[in-house]
Image (spheres, rainbow, N blue to C red):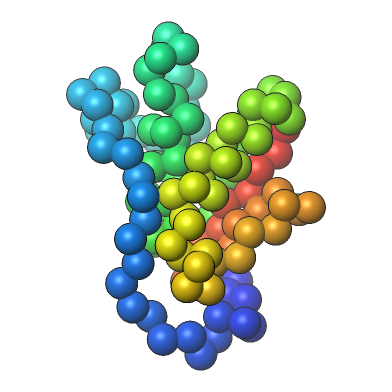
Length: 116
């Protein structure tokens, strides 16, 4: 559901700062399904890869993405990654981060919610 504060905003082009996926991430994206379990090393950039999927495959298509992790501190890694990627959109008022609710709402109705 779109927020009222976004209702009459002109939509322009916004650069989202996502990292370029490496070959392993490209393979995972090709097989990505509704529920996924990754067992990868600590330098595989799982957080960056999931941030790309959350924004490119969900937010840009007006869908909601639930980011879960076993602990709050791990959940915060995802929050910080998506917040960093969305800096330009935040500055232009095209998305609203709500840290108390651990949610980022985008102008088009897309949303990323974080839970531990």
